[in-house]
Image (cartoon, rainbow, N blue to C red; front, side, top):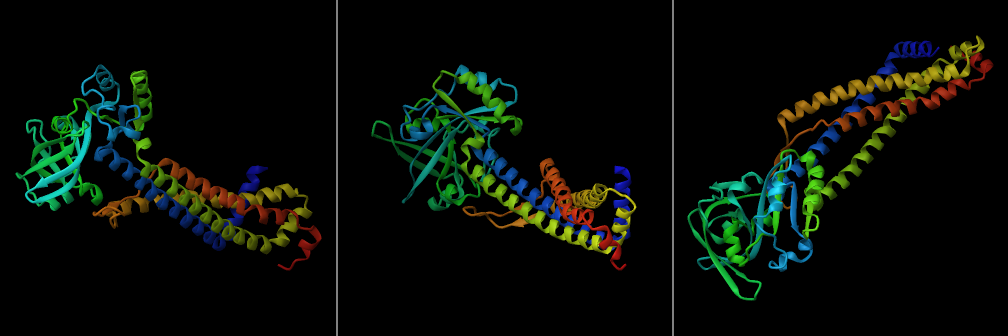
Length: 406
């Protein structure tokens, strides 16, 4: 019986193909639009995530407990050793690419008559290349054989008026209240695209940062993994290793407040977009099915008079909506995927985001959840749209339906 009802529903759609095509076109456009919008949002999430990790945050960071609350103002209390059996144990975990130590120090940088604030990050040059993307735009990156070589943010280099080969004096206050200084040789200039950061940033060898801050340890161990998807699993293993040592483990998504807030905001926006598309589809498809039902009033009355159960009429009309939803989902997802590939091939030119000075080319990222959500959206909207016309058709009084003019 169900197969017969589905076959009749299909034949009704074929017979009313003009209206069916209008409804189908609405579904295809809505689903394709959702796929493109969802794919664009997913690409933004991916781009923010990878740039956050590649620009130096790494996948996981290990620090002394309490460092993030007060450690930057109290280097001696919250340092951790550069070399440690715990670090070696973490480096040996499956999925860990490399572990690097870091130390931050800040105060004033001077060249000639110019003195400006700086914020330096001391890193292990040979190891850090495997953690952070090389962002040097002029000159050379840090090198283990150049113990005083430094690279400057583009804005800081401009403010100091320095070029490759120039010397810079760094001055900072020590923990004991005295002053400490070191001289660095500019090897290159880098740019992260974040103007506020590039106006202050310096990257220098870890030993030079330790000399400047007059400390022996580091503040962080930064861990780079082979696969971002393994972050939580590796972090759990690392917490087991450092348990009882006074250290804490934080993942990149725990450290990146901007990423979390962006995901929350844009996910809500996509929910609103899906709701709007669903409302449009339900109203449009319901209107088409209702018009089709009204035109077949006498036919429905004849079916009821011949003994066709009302629930069978109900299922047949709901099946029309479901068939439209299935066809629309398949065609819409296909159209959306093809458009996504074409758009990604050319790229979407985007202006610089707030706080950055460089634009970028966006893409459309086709993720499985977006495809599933698009199919569910089409199917559910079409099925919901068919309920009222189906109920209306199944509740027709037989006599009134037969009296209706053709």
